[in-house]
Image (cartoon, rainbow, N blue to C red):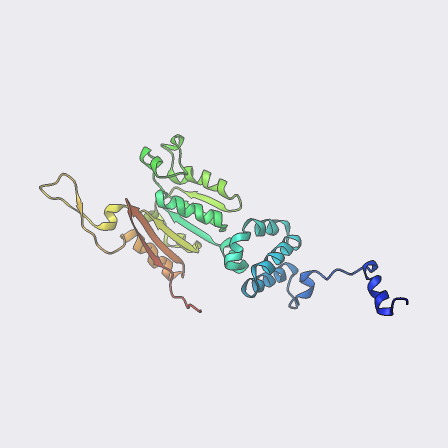
Length: 260
C-alpha cells in the first residue's frame, strides 16, 4: 500500500525551501514621518520596558547593523548599562555637559565614573598647582606633574578613559567665573571645598598649638552662589567632599515628580 497524500507531503517536507522570517524591524510598525534610525531607537526603548533581556539582546544586536557606524559602536560599547536604564537615558547622558570643580581625591572617582558612563562633555575646573601631597590621593596625577596646573594635568589622563567624551581643562578660579559661565552646564559638581571655609573660622585656644574648627551646617559663600545660579537656571547642583574617613554631600536637583 503506497503512502497517502499526507505521508507524501511529510516525506518531501525536508526538500522544501523555507522562507526566513522578515527582520524584526519589519515586524514593528514605524510611525509615519519618523527617520529609520530614530524608529530603531524608539523600538529599542519600548522593548527595554516591556520585554525580557533575551529579546532585548536580539534587538540591540539588530540595532548594530542598521544604525550609523558611530552610533552602532556606541551601542556596543555601552550595551550593559543600556540594558539597565534604557536607550533614552543613555542618549540624555550622551548629550549632557558636566562641570567638576576642584580636582582632588573625590573628583578623581567622579570624573572616572562620568567618562566611563559616556557623558557628552566634562569640564574640569581647578586653579591650583599639583603638589607632592596630591600624588597620594589622585590616580590621574604623576610625579612629573608636580608644578603643573591640576586641571590640565588630570585632563590628559581622563581623556584616555573614553575618547568619545570631550574633556576640557579650565585653569580659572571658581570665584572669578561670571554668572553666565554656569548656565552652559547641565550638572555642576563642586568637590572638596576648603575645610576652613566649610566648617567655620578657627577657634584658637591657649592650651593648644593647632586651630580647632567649629562646625556650621551651611555651604561656603562660593558654593551657595553657584547653587543659587544653578537653581535659577534649573540645573542640577552637587557639593561633596571627604575629610579623612568622613564625607559629606549636598544635592540640589530642583523639584521632581516621581512615578512608581
